[in-house]
Every structure is written in structure tokens, then in C-alpha cells.
Amino acid sequence: AVESLDYEVIENYAYREEQAQRSKFWVPYYIMLKWFFALLIGVGTGLAAIFINLAVENFSGWKFTLTFAIIQHSYFVGFLVYILLNLALVFSSVYIVTQFAPAAAGSGIPEIKGYLNGVDTHGILLFRTLVGKIFGSIGSVGGGLALGKEGPLVHTGACIASLLGQGGSAKYHLNSRWVQIFESDRDRRDLVTCGCAAGVAAAFRAPVGGVLFALEEVTSWWRSHLMWRVFFTSAVVAVVVRSAMNWCDSGKCGHFGAGGFIIWDISGGQEDYSYQELLPVAIIGVIGGLLGALFNQLTLYITKWRRTYLHKKGKRVQIFEACLISLITSTVSFVLPLLRKCSPCPELETNSGIQCPHPPGTDGNFVNFYCSKDNEYNDLATIFFNSQDDAIRNLFSAKTFHEYSAQSLITFLVMFYSLAVVTFGTAVPAGQFVPGIMIGSTYGRLVGMSVVKFYKKLNVDEGTYALLGAASFLGGSMRMTVSLCVIMVEITNNLQLLPLIMLVLLISKAVGDFFNEGLYEEQARLKGIPLLDSRPKQVMRNMNAKDACKNQKVVCLPRVSRVVDIVSVLQSNKHNGFPVSRCQF
Image (cartoon, rainbow, N blue to C red):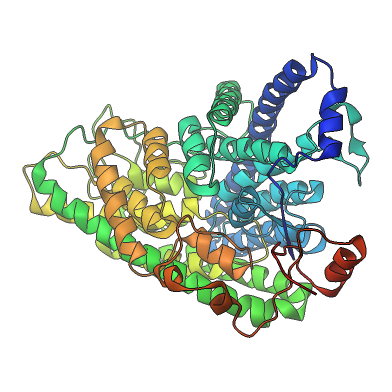
């Protein structure tokens, strides 16, 4: 069930009386407290992101280190250990969600988008939802499922902001009266907006992208005063995350290191582009729009079937489904590289900093997996038998020509695309940013290989086209443009590719819009979250109110009503919004 939020100031007698009782110092105190809460939201979201990333990186590092150590003696035993470790992590995630925090399932962005547009879904901003989101994300992402932690981080930031605004959680006796000053839905909405921007800034280390994400994707209103606080919150997150990374550089964070927070620096790659490359870039945009729209439609069908038939059978079925998908994902990621022949290590530049093959259990290119010789690597294992952040870093890497064969990239694209479609909608915290980047960078790298082969004299880098492919798929699926463009520039540290990123985003969004709506809009409609479009559809311009009501009886209230009549209307109807007009009972 959803409820409407009241974002307007109702200037009735009680409101005016309350305003008259406030002292002259109340307004400065109120403004100062807003900025202080923006600071707390940034610090809290940054610390939550650090904890999630540390846990995921260490769980993944221990898992791959142990598996690589065991497969030196027996691949079958290593396979069993790998499956059991992933299964344990995924089971912990789905158990937390189903038994403790059902609202923590999914990315949470459609629900937060509905909240910021005036629709409150029960349970989405509770303390147990925050706990379930954090620990559930660690289990689902660390367990190797085809999903990410970026969407859940947005939901995490929103939960932290909401809990701060209401003074904590009264149910778990973690509340304080002195911070319970933001009593209106309008004030809490501003805090949740800061939390959303902080979540994106923490997930991608993209503070400007976080501000634009809140502006473009999740809100239908904006104020200049709110812009300053959102920007300040994102800046605080960036400082907290950078401080944590500097502290972890000394080796105090275990396996957290080169993997860490999402940032794929390709500033040392392709420095310029020619007009001859615009055609393949446009092709990448078209592919991204088609595959993104297909992804939205497939996930819509599967999620609808899952909610209609599967999840109605109880929590045990949800747990069994997530564990079954974990078994399939682990089997595919382990077995498929075994079927791929190893390739000899290419000649690399001495100053490239790339080692072939890299030591087992560490992140990097050229994974030696089931190879008979020491100077060989398995290109399919480089992206399959690896954490998603490291796999994307390998696909984006510059000056690694001919690292991947077209056969391996196509195999990975088909299998990972299928796994991402099936995994999305299970009862675990699931983000879609990183899987989308994985899918897009794969076919982008394929196009880059074709361009390198066709334009032999151009200074073309395959990693550049992997970046453009990632942007095109996200644009074709999520239909974001400005914020996504800035996020891609911030996480890759390459401003020179900005015009190409803008081009593929515009093309992919236009192609995707021809078929269906964005991923979050489709999921919001499926969950029964009513989102009012910015403009009415063309068919509504010639409709009257009686056409929309059809044969249903309109329940309305006169301008002057008796209390008993209002109570009777509320008790006899399930909804809480009624037109006020000249009507009779």
C-alpha cells in the first residue's frame, strides 16, 4: 500500500499559532541545523559505503585467493569450495531480506523516486531496511551474483537521511528528541534528496554526478537552496571516501586495494579521435538502445511472472530461487573458462605496469586459469572468474590489444546478459549500474576490436570503445543523459571523450524511448507506485473528467463538510484523496 505525502505548507490556525510562539533565533537555528544534517548525511553515507566496499572486496579477495590456492591441486575441489562460498554469501543476503527487511529487496531507486514525488511506500525508510540493505548488499555482491551495490547505496543514503530527520528509530529505542525538528514531509523530502545524491557520490566517487542524478532522475522539483545543500553533502562524501582510500593504501584494509571503490582510470588510453570513428560510435549507441530496451522488457516480464506466481508461495521459495541462481551463476563463471583454450602472453610495453599472467588471487589482466604453461592466460577467466569491478577495469584497460578474442567476448555477453535479466528481481538488494557497465563494455570492446582491425592507421584503443559501450547500455536502459554523462567522465578520469559519451547517450536514449520507458519507471509501475508524468499524454488532452471515471461513482467533498460526513467517507473508501467541489452526498 502507498500513501500520499503532503509537501505543501498548510497555513491554518494551528500553523500560525506555532509560528507565533517561535523566538527570533529559531530561523537561524533551523537553517544551521539543515546544514549540520547535510554534513551528517554525507559522513554517514560515506562510512556506510566504506563498510560495504571493504566487506565486499575482502570477501571476494578471500574467496578467489582460497579458490586459486585449491585449484593448484584439484580443480573439482576448488569448484565445490567456490560454489559453497558464493552460496553461503547469497543465502545470508536473501535470509536477511526475507526474514528481517522485505523492503530492502531490489535497488530501492523506484521507491525513493516515488517518495520524492509524493508517494510513500510502507517500510522503505525504516531502520531495519537500512540494516538489511547494507548487509544484504555485502552478501549478494560478494556472492558473485550479476548485480551491483550502487542502487542499494542510493537507498542506504536515503534511509540514513530519513532516520536523521525523524530523530532515529523509536521502535529500537535509538532516537533523540533534540533532533526532532523536521516534522513536515517537506523537510524530510529535502533530507532524503541529499541522501540520494550522497549515495551516488559514494558509489561512484562522483560528487557532481550525484547532484545531477538527484536533479535529473529522482525529483520532479528543485530549489536553489536545496542545490547548495545537496552539493555540500556530495562534497562531504567525496572527502570521507578519499580519506578512507588513502588510509587503505598502506595495506591496512586487507584485500581492499586496486579494486576498491569504482573508478576506472583510462586517462592513459586514447587521447584523440577522428571523424571516421563517429560511425562506429553511432552504431554503439544504436546497439545500446536496442539491448537496453530489450533488457527492460525482459526484466518486466520476468518480474511480473515472479511476483504473480513464484513469490506468492512464501519466503522459502524466494530463498530457494536466490540460492538456485547463485548455483547457476557460480557454475557458469567457473566452468565456461575451463572450456576455453589459453593464449600465450602478448608482448607488453615495459612501462605499462601490466603483468602477464598476474599472480593468482590478485586483481589484474591476464588470469592464468587452467593453462598448461606459465606464460599463458585465459581471456574468458579474466572477465568471468573475477569480481565485477576488476572485470570492468580489465575491459576498460588501455594498451591491451588482442587481449580478448571475439569468441570469448560474445560468450560472456550472452551468458552475463541472461544472468543479469534472471537475477534482477530476486529477493536480494540489487543494483543495475555495474551489470549494465559490464554488458555495455563487452560489446563496446567488440566494436573497438573491429575498428582497430578496419582502421589500421588510426590511434584507436579498444578500452575507449568499452567505455562508450557501457555508457550506451546504461543510457538505453535507464534513460539518463546529463547525470550519467558526468558520472562516466568522473569514474574514468577522461574528459577528452566527453563529446563521444554525449553522442552515444543521446542515440541510445532515443532508440530506447522508441520501444518502452526507462528501467526505474517500468519497475515503479509494476510495484504500484504512481508517478505523475511531467506532461500529460496526447490521448488525455481531449478527455473530460467523466471519461476518466467511466462508470465509477465519484466520491467528493463539499467545501463546507461536517466531521461525521468526512469520517464516514474515510471509513467507506480505501483511498485518502478526494476532490473538493460542489457535490452532494
